[in-house]
Image 1: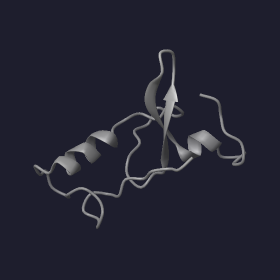
Image 2 (image 1 turned 60 degrees about the vertical axis):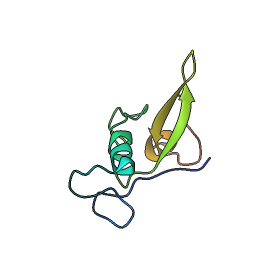
Image 3 (image 1 turned 180 degrees about the vertical axis):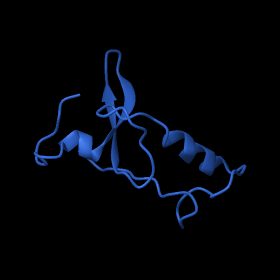
Image 4 (image 1 turned 180 degrees about the horizontal axis):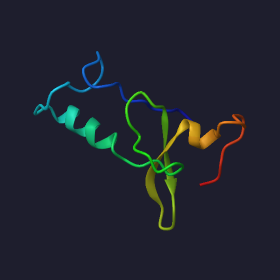
Length: 80
């Protein structure tokens, strides 16, 4: 499974530093506010995460890499 990470605002591949009208910048800002299924924190910038499917009925969600693998056992995934 591949992971995703959003670059910080103002960086080469990140959204604009100031508020702007770019559709991509607004989409990125909104996506970084999604809450991780593991820790409940926002996905944020420069923090690797996975898109996952959870629940019944199934829905799309996000989980930080560190929450999926855990701090001690990096070889096995948690069940969410």
